[in-house]
Length: 155
Image 1: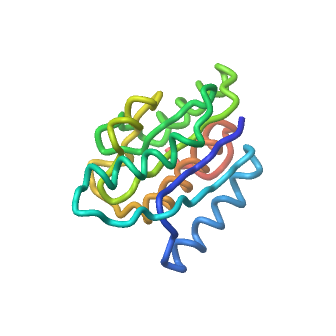
Image 2: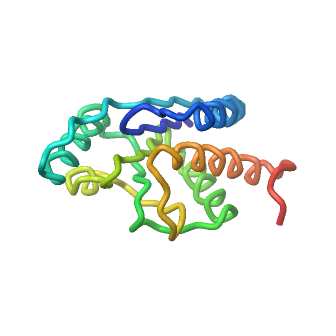
Image 3: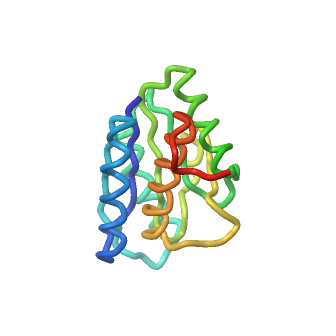
């Protein structure tokens, strides 16, 4: 299964980059992984216009066969084992390409929400869209170790 993690804007903090690199390297053992940072959209006075431009960048690259999952506060919440079960279900259904999308500071535009196959929330808490990249990479790695019954996750 090919997994892509797409995000708006560059990761600025070196500690986040280092952590992401660690988990991306680990994840390549389990899946074909792609990480793409899309251009920041110039802030406009209209939040909706900014979100629409960010969404358009993603929509222009999504293929019809891609399974698209938005990381969004309104999405389904999983514990780590539940998320592992979800990842396993994607594998069981032979989903070939999964794209996880982290939007900008204001979230996702409705046009992208309409295209999404699933919305997932990482927490009831709010994290910066840059921190979410590292947190999600770790949770995705954790999910694969749970699926393979490897020593990493303690229950």
